[in-house]
Length: 178
Image (cartoon, rainbow, N blue to C red):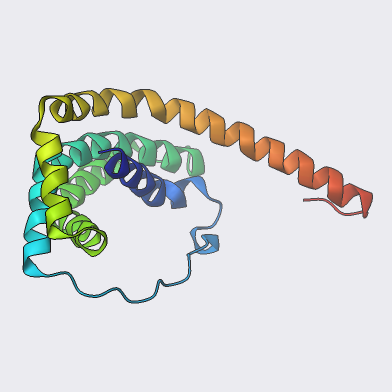
């Protein structure tokens, strides 16, 4: 579930990135990974079962619910005069698209898990999520993610400021700056 939460946070940041960046085209994409052997049907079925056991769809839906207001805030920041009607239309369209495409993302998750875990490992992870402590992890994760979001954003802002200061100090010694 922690890996899943990390992936979900990465998804949120990836989807929100263009509204936070000055130019979405400047986003840096990692190089393509080497091809991985295609997972078996049994691995994919076990991965889908794992996602079901872990409550991945409900976690995604909760994250999607917080994604829309973040996107709206980004739109309003870039265009403070945007109409309420435009925001309403965007909000409805975004919610519709996220809802309509959740299964597609779940399939991507299943393929990813199946590429990295054997069928037996996926079954063991599923068994964990169906155990009492696994159910507690699932039940607690939405609150942990809710509490983590502002902490992670603050941490990232502080780290970014520190890096800018450090790099600017080095660059200033050479007569340059960011």
